[in-house]
Length: 165
Image (tube, rainbow, N blue to C red; front, side):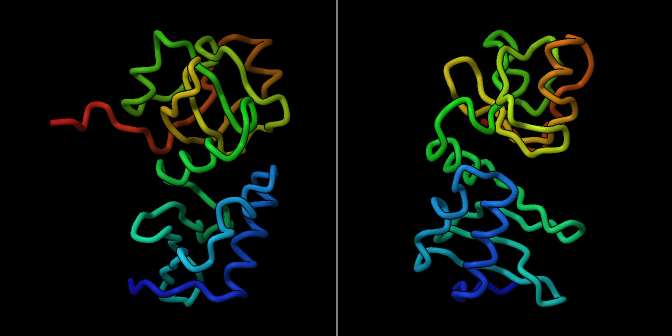
């Protein structure tokens, strides 16, 4: 796919999607540098990949137009939005497994943004607010702390500690 500089109209669309989906002005914060944002389009002409300079930061999922952050994009969001917003905090003793790509179970969750809903994309961090992974929240925050069992976050991308040589 060919990369191109983002147009003003496309930048407005991307900002609006991010602001709607994540709140907290995430779109305004991340996509304020129009000169550094590039996109790739699918064969249909729709935006598919979003880059900050040379680094992929997000994918616009074709099936439902949800904006999914890469690890680099999630790191930018984490730095822009204060805790506990958009975060699921896990115990430090399981952080290594989450960083390797394992999913998060409710019994390992220490804290969670109470404004999140099941199905939301979240940042998974350890107790020291280090980014471990990004994924989809399976249980609501109330369910996580009520049941203390079951899958809480299905991890989509992790920082990949096991990928080091």
